[in-house]
Image (cartoon, rainbow, N blue to C red):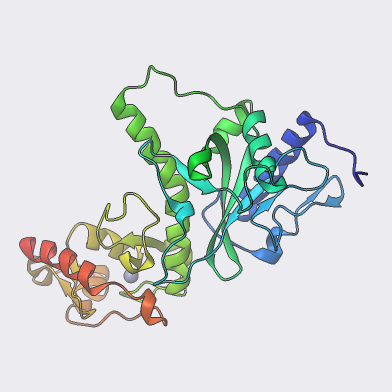
Length: 314
Ligand SMILES: [Zn+2]
């Protein structure tokens, strides 16, 4: 006997839409992660229906006909990342069935969402008890042999239009498809990577210690090093906007021993305080901020590679 009346499809769509708008508001449009207790604060029509379940990876509220969300647990740095991260050659993410076969309720709940074309929320663990909400996502296929669903990470525009999946169709060229797949992947990877880096550096610029998260970026040490997965925090640096640009454009290099170098021609230039304090005076100095956890510090192998590229122009 069901304790709650079943929601209609329209009602579920409305709920999901409201939930995602709320998440967008709480996360600065998906840019910031949430603490698990905050995720449970969502209210709809005066009732609290949690958006994820603390104890279950796949979550279908009792009155729902299909899964509402699924969770990927946080993996400590240095440990193997879970297989859920895998990206197929089609550029779509994969999410594993829950153990127990295709017909256990959790897997059926995901399948129901897939068949109805309902948008879901993916909670991706970026630290103990902290999740990046990725939404909306659609389950667009199932690979029974591999015991997994194919996940498409969409954007909110898609949701507000009609909540349905639009097919890429055969008209897209290979290049366009690759681009679309890359964009979808970035919608998952960028915010997850950023959250991991911001936490590791406690929201400081590694070079100047600036402590205003709005002015900080999660910079990659080597670009495209992890095309197929979430970039590891060890390929990241928390940098303020200026130091990020300076690093990417090779005005500034960082040695594997964490010492900053500024390009020679810049060292000889005379200009205002930003150049003097922000760049020239950092030359020969160690990074001011590093992650407390050794395992989260920038990889010396990756720094070395990037530094050699910097030396080519410095
Ligand atoms: Zn800085």
